[in-house]
Amino acid sequence: MEQHFVQEEDVRLETTRARFSNVLRRHGELTERLSRDSDKMIFERLQKEFGAARAAQTQEICLHGEQWNDGLLATIRERVHMEAERKAMPGDTDILPGLHFHEKITYKVGTKVICCLEGARIGIQYETSFAGETCEMYHCVLESKSFLEKMTVLEHTVPFFLPLREAENDLLSSNAMKFIDHVGDLLQAYVDRREQVRIIKEIYGNQIGELYHSLPYHMIEFVLEDFDWKLAWAASLLAVNWFCFNMVSELGTRLSSLIFPLFVP
Image (cartoon, rainbow, N blue to C red; front, side, top):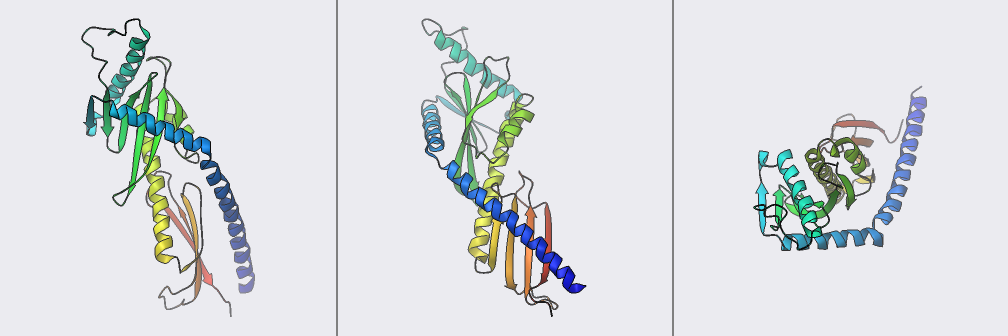
């Protein structure tokens, strides 16, 4: 009976390994897709455009707490559309006296930088970090045909395996501010999980037999062989652990472990 139980667990383990081997294969294919020249060109172009916008700014406003709100975002939207209309008018004059839309204002909200880009577009640059060290920058460009129409994502450099389009469908038309903040949370949580896995490999690499993870690092499997758990009843164990993360959570929300002896007497 006991041997039959062990055989069933072996089958389950092999099924899990096969599933994560497939994830690993897809990871390699999609990583290659990420590094294509077209993706790099979009990043480089947007990086230059954001750099030019910040270089041309006449003022940078740092927002704290409730200063970042729907009203301010509406003002930014109004500014980019009126600036586009002003440039389209003969003589390039102010549309309304007293409104100084020649000002180039950049807004900084925590790790987000919001710029008014050419063509009635709003650009958000996300800065990520881990343990106090700066990591990658990501971009998201929003546009709308008019001030009264809903905004859409025109282009971005967010990793394709993060649920940006889902967030756009769920949030952008109803609460653009929440959408902008949510994308920043997604990116930072992804970087946090990725760097945590990197540290696990560095510290426990000689004790980890196998380590698999999903592309956004929200599911991780690792195998520890012949690991001394310092438990009286187990000195030589094989443990398989699945860590399931919320997509925007830094820490695990569910943890399940399967532990059984390497050798059955």
